[in-house]
Length: 172
Image (cartoon, rainbow, N blue to C red):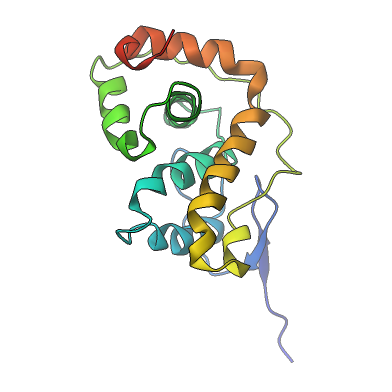
């Protein structure tokens, strides 16, 4: 009998069947973890869930932060910035992609690595596997809120980046 090879994601700790998938750029995740998360994200392309998609994108990236490369630091920063804008400033989460484009319009090169908070006990995208799709909207926001709170030591820095790049989106 042949043993089934498994791989554990270095960030979230989920175990997957090893498939030799390439690691994604800009986040610290196994290729298998990223592929499994993409299956969940695909559900958020349905018209009824599309407006909540950015919560899933941001929560996943912020539970798989990679702070040793410029792309990784930038990915984490942008996703935390959109969480701030949507959860704290009342900006529509559905505008996440547009917000990312606005943030990058000035080609900022000032993002600094943030100390990664303990993420081991936070929920992962696997919470969607057992839930009916009718609960996905609520779960996506709850997941985003939990991830945002985990990064609370850096909220002031994240807000400062938003004030510098998209001040018109930050509420007083």
